[in-house]
Image (cartoon, rainbow, N blue to C red):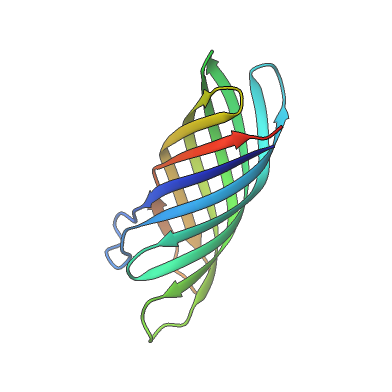
Length: 149
């Protein structure tokens, strides 16, 4: 079991009507060992995305493969599927709902037996629904966490 707190940017290249912002997420995952150097993580995530034009609250299910690539370095590749509720800052637009998928690649460094830090330079979110035009966002991020068990 592990808990993590992440912070990332939120950039929608090519969509000039969507303003850039930041996100903050809290996740809990079960860590299932596959081999001595590989494990699968699955869990739950709560996420807030904050931008000047709209805020989003998201619930997601992360699924990651984590591989040891050195004695003190791990690489992760993951997909998070989720539901987003969007709250617009304009009085002319009602809130909207959308489904999303986030694909991320990152590097994680264990610090001691239970703590870790990581960076995800490659992370993309695809979001859309009948009410929300499909959006592709780039979300590079950082995280810190603790392995509880």
